[in-house]
Image (cartoon, rainbow, N blue to C red; front, side):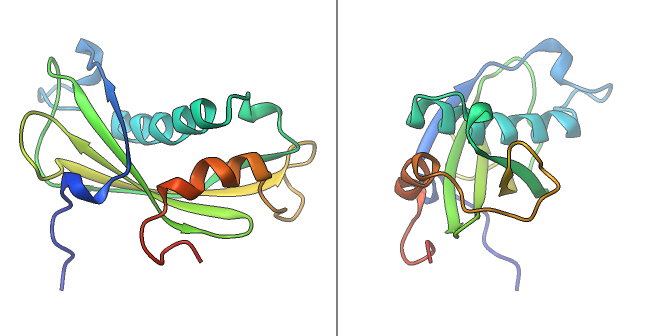
Length: 150
């Protein structure tokens, strides 16, 4: 059975972004590529703010190993978008996030993204996965709900 449409109460951290005219496609709704930019921004902005460091300069960096999106209804310019963030799994060297996009007063997400960060050596990203930095783990742990963080 399909998972029920996500609601606001499933997410832990929030950020509001302003939509831009250029975010819409020729059909007048948010361009598919923009959804993925928003997912990347939700995760990395949280990491920057929660750690207080430039996450690109850490010994291990998160690279995107997987991303996907479920679309539930159209959204677009000119209304702002609220992005909810939660971590479904926090592993030794990876984190799996869900990002809900909301526009307007409704309680149900207009779209939801899945975003997987895998940590690699910053000097040689082709090297095998290494444990994520402690500062990242500390920033992500509060995003984990229930027993999902094992």
